[in-house]
Length: 153
Image (cartoon, rainbow, N blue to C red):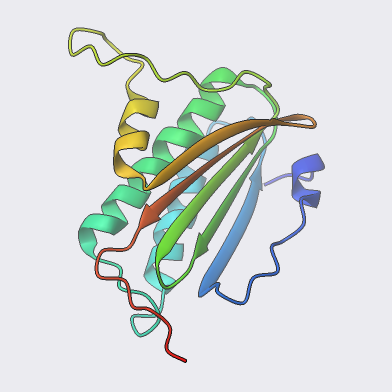
């Protein structure tokens, strides 16, 4: 991990959060693996009584993180920030990087080699967006929890 401008992105003040984790990475070879490790630990820490996380959804979250962090590493040699948040209804994955180039979603083409990451992410997510921000871009994905528990009251 490293100190960089994205590390100063304020933490969300949201009472609906069940769990939240954040880590900053530099352009180092093990940053993708470290992001996957953080995600695996994050998913294991989600309290069963607070959010209905199935094995399928956990696998989807792992794949989304892997694709987004790998894209950031492949297309940018600067700093990255991974933010993971869980509510009773969804898991949110946000990746910031220093490239201003927004990810492209190519038309479906089973014969194309590569370039399917964003297509896969968009199919797995209930919402997906990318936007330019000062110093780079922010990519945000939401994965709905199947059978999500709704807060009472």
